[in-house]
View (tube, rainbow, N blue to C red):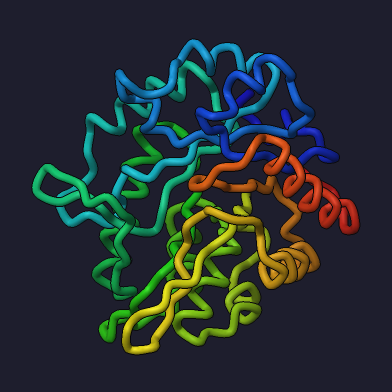
Length: 286
């Protein structure tokens, strides 16, 4: 299922597919619109079984979400990674493929986190080139996710929303709008979260992520919100989701939960809440 038309407009919400739920899903086939996987987890020999995905994709559409492409790396794209992704894509036919507006690879290694970039003309040119290379190689449109951030560069000459929007308009890529990341970054940097959403053209948004976060406090009394995906979606993020839907962003929506993972029913409960928001504002979709 490699097309958005594969999705039922009345079941646009999916959840992240994680190992603790594999057996439950196969045995119970719970009602769920779709599942999203972390792509490179399945590149590893000791990672989740590909035979499991062979069974899952019979009943559910899949989306591939990457964290290792490192589109902002000055060292260029990892051709081996792209080859693995293309082979994987040609086996499972995901309806969406996405990665992040960030970088992580350097000198043949990778940092265990997604690192921010300065929003400058130089980084714009680098990202535009790498996105074009990736899309040409894969033969597919990619989605770019806005990051959660904990610092800002003085060198930046674009706002994040303008950088992401202009980049997608230039390359033909689309946006994976992580609303929890918008809330986290806006809280950390004192941005206006709704103004951020206002700056994103709704027609560029092809997927939304929702998740929970954590509050970290430091000895000097300062605090940061951290995108931990370890709790339920908070009321403020649900409010921003409703605002995005009202702006016309009625698109496939994912519930992410990567730490302190609950039983599957916990994710299903969050998915039902998200679907209830969509049901109040269903518009033509496709």
